[in-house]
Amino acid sequence: MKQLKGVVCATVTPMMPDGSVDYAGVRSLCRHLNANGIHCLYPNGTNGESLSLSAEERQKIASAILAENQNRATVYIQCGASTVSESYAHVRHARALGADGAGLMTPVFFPMDEKAMQEYYETILDEITDFPLYVYNIFTRTGNDVSAELLGRLMDRYSNLYGIKFSYPDLERIKAYVNAPQNRRAHALIGSDCNAMNCYNVGGCGWVSGPAAVYCKLHTGLWDALEAGNKEGAVAMQKGIETAMANIAGIPEIPAIKYMLMKMGVIAYDTCRAPFRKLTDEEKQRLDVALEAYQKMI
Image (cartoon, rainbow, N blue to C red; front, side, top):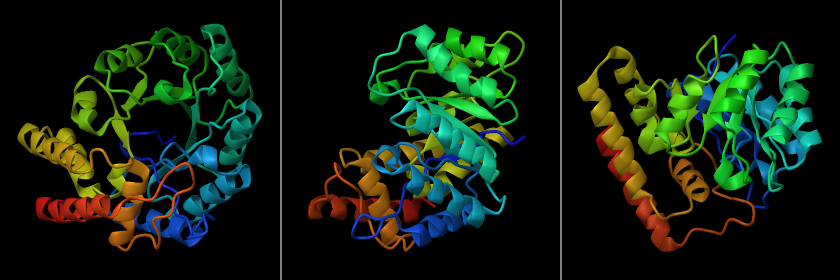
């Protein structure tokens, strides 16, 4: 079974000017990521504006990516939604489509204690026993955190639960996740571009990034250097990623990614759904400069 490993791109959702999903753009983005060596695709997550999409749209996006990808990159579908029933339905759909696996975000908004959180994951893991799953912990957005102890208990019971994507720059938590199960190591990935190399160095198996859709070569270059034991090269690539992130700091990230992909000719429009606002002319000028700087880096 394929696992989340290396550079995992949390893909944006291309949209038409009227806000409908641009499925041709979804396919074009997939081709772009395949051509630039991105290891894993992770659609319908935070960067994909998943909570602003209907269940039907999310399923059509997943289908389009899998049809275009043709087993080039590993594809895990993020299945967490605003309701538990829809979340579980997306897991079932991802399995039926033939995705490599699924990420399942914690419940959102309503505070869950550890017992409730455990039951949430156990319910679907009791049903889905032959399909790889990862926990997706983005507690700063959902309001619900997954402890290392809980991850360990779940992984000790369910062999198809491989690990966790953690969207917070806490390396001690990454180490705790890795060592949480009793008889194996958890696959831990960080959702923090500026901590990609650090995550690898403390035992993580990769990182999840939205901006990797634009800065593909910096991210894949970092992974290649790390895997080759090229410390100097890895440091250079990590510094390049940090510079790239500094160049777009303060600009809404998802609209920024879409704008840069549009400027690169990957997608046709930079439309986002509300509550995202349109970028200012000044922000667009900064992103143009950031793209020029990236071209010089590579």
